[in-house]
Image (tube, rainbow, N blue to C red; front, top):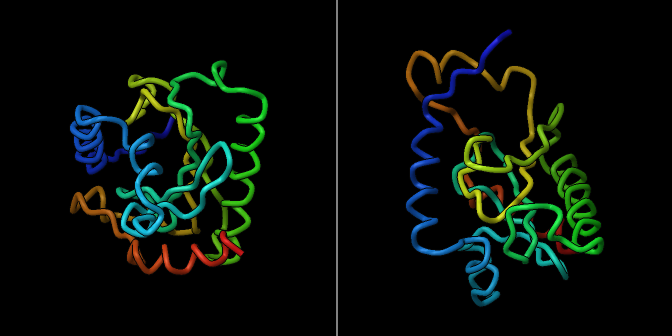
Length: 164
């Protein structure tokens, strides 16, 4: 079995733990005024869920689809909430394809702290665009992950595509 060694990710998990002690960002950020969406990296507001950029991305264009309901299990979501999550996942993938032309995606969620969830009390899906060659020696030899585009520039490219 091959293993992906990603020691640089521990910093993000520790930051998420500190954030969790202050409240739930997935509950608090969408309640913030709409004029703060760019600052909060919220790309799209749905009826039952929203799309937000990952502030600590694994790759350029790393998005998350999050229900407004604060829950850590899928069973607590209604059918309408689960359907909108799937619709927003597809909308995210379509938009990332138009904007960034990735070669593939990692899509999924980590349920529970032991599964790798940095914010384990509020479930969310990750959509991580992938390109051939996007993994290299930098994380292993220099403990450095190269993100090829700025978060705000990526936000500005994705926002109009998601809000047509």
